[in-house]
Image 1 (cartoon, rainbow, N blue to C red):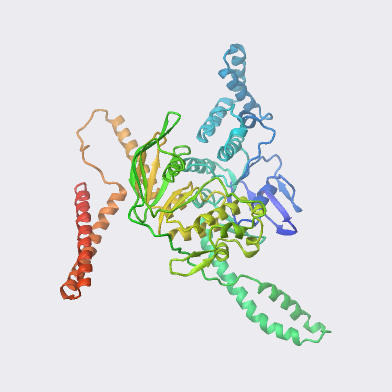
Image 2: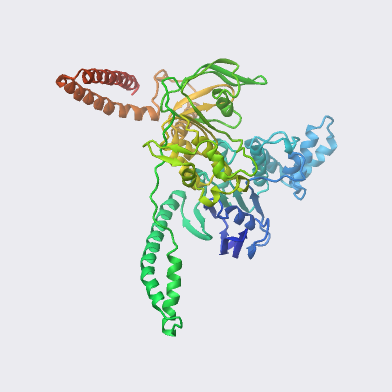
Length: 621
């Protein structure tokens, strides 16, 4: 039985129905993801279920006494002054006692009698454990100064504050609109565990595919006013959705073919049709409606031609940066190479954005050398948002950068064609930028960066406010991007798919370079923690130290894989050298001889390097 549901709900904007006669129900313990492209009405449906406004058609029915917690994309703090005012509710006695207790403890002159009275009341109401839960949530979301003015908070801090309040209030149903925006990866993983503990009922809209996979047991897609349900995680949904779309295309094509025959019959009918033809006439109109279904579309491979890149790209030597005596980056060195695809990870505030501002010379370093190659051309997508003039059209914003973009195969795409690929239909392209949603503006900002034809692309949280369909287009683009890529993102799926190396920021100045993506790093960290716990357990069981081989290095999971692959790689290289040598012995052309000699020399260097590495790893096995 549903604890909250809709009855024939419908809602429209600007005379356009988002959905009509929609039934949507949640049972206790359901964890459901609502997906769909921007503009389908996902956020509107969430607000209707949270009873923020009534639907234009139908109604919402819920179990008596049920408490609904709603997290909006953009929290509203109108009428509130400090964090304290927002966190502690006036209608919650436990929260009011905790607030009063905190105020007395932190006051300069402590009223011992009043403190004792409040402590007794907290014990009677079992508020101590509740206080501990509140502090755990607030600490996890980096909220510590309760007297801080809400107006002084950034957008990310406001989102975390709103999420903290939602979790503290312990609702019966959690309705979450993009909850992972502005959270670091560790906090997202903590939130996943929190939401999957106990029989929580969750309805979430999110672009984070790993989050959806880890949280949800059902996916519901809102598409052109209709709701499609899939029992399973996000991966299962993608598979079944592809099947449904394929069948829809086949059905529509079949209807279009049959419609041609029926259309001829309709044209031949006299104006005064008899009753015998009525059923066929009705069938014609049904067929006409079916024929409006989707058509088969070939996917365009978007691979752009980037600006020429020289041998020197970007070099950092002992770079350091501090703010107010806090070291953010200390003595960091790295030489960027062609094909580098690097993800920046670390908690919020550990220096990732500072690093990007340093390498683009937006801010100066305190010490060290940053040397940028002459041919390096940055494309920098920032979190700040799109700057535009009132009255500016979507197409104009892109054409201000370039009228077309050149593809890797020599073809060119106009600004309009590229906009269409990034899900801006013609009617949107000629509309005003001011009329776009937040997610659409982010998408347009990304377009401007890509149109500038950079060879060094920097993306700072590109997935915020973008729907999954847009992210799929972005991923396809970036997979084929031939230049340097630096990605800052809390989206683990994006990091895993697009990066091959990590710069890990710890917040105290150290930046660790890790070869592999986030999944590799997470696996090794979990294995390391398991080994540490096992060793700790052994030491407790046997405190007397025993002689062990502690000096011998243990290979990581990634190094074991590397060792296994090296032998076959060396074999392939040696075979290639053999083939090139045979060609060299039979060649007579001077240019060809020179070219083959250089190739063989380069291949031999690779064999020597890989053999040395293979022997090094073999010593530890």
